[in-house]
Image (cartoon, rainbow, N blue to C red; front, side, top):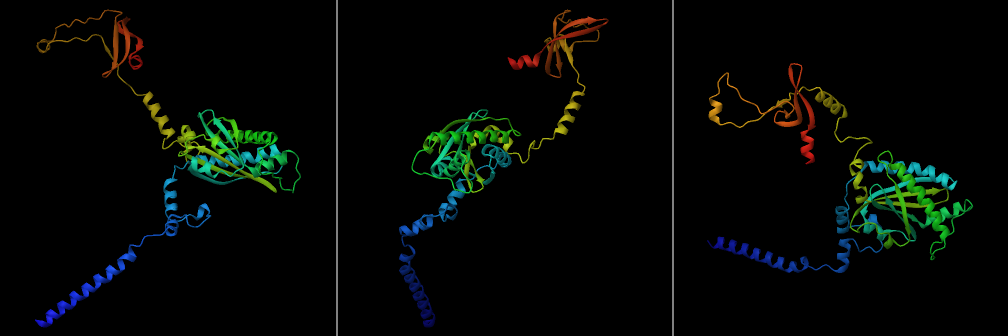
Length: 350
């Protein structure tokens, strides 16, 4: 038994040593993170980082929060807008203009206002049929390029930029003309889907004065690139989801004219067959309430007097549903009725 006791004591000793080692390592495991490690975990510790180089929890939060409904038909509308703008801006500037789409993204309105590259001009426009607003942003590079082109600047020379001063009246007027052209093209791009009018409201240079929606509301942002050989810039078109809500069902289509599962051929066939369906109409001359004993005692040859005189109103029913009110009369040797009014329509209006 002494050998077994020695083995038991040795196992107990080994267990105590393991517990002591765990206790000595516990403070290192429960070490408090310093500020640099917290910043690295949250994705803020790299100084100036690009938006596509986010890391840590910041990327997880951003991916989870900015997730909105895709609108396939809106992408087709923007593709159509690019083609129309390429032609209209060539006529507007009398120069070789190429327009392309850089990106179409969903984001919050407040996040976009905080990221608007200044200086820029922000055009607020109203959508008449949808009774809401949108935003068109022209960056400074395109502003100076348009001014240079319209006022006869030479090709091959970069547009002169004078920073640190407000835009002049001439510059604002020329940019307003450009905005009018773009909004007209946007209306034409939506025309195959729905007729809509985009009306220019005002021009702002401070994003705070261009607030057309709540900061937390979701928006669609389309970034367009305008190239005029060695000049050009960007146009950013912002449409809140609330603005697009009246045509949301149309924008959810995968292709133009989609009926969301409806089969027009089957609907037409069903409607034609229903029109040729035979139905029985009952003319109710009179309704009486009798005791059960009287009904039980009825025999062949008994008479039931109806309280219906010629010309009095009667009802036409299909099953238990009253359909029309008519007048009772006689045509040749048969009883006839003349329909006076529709009962179901009169009941629904009441």
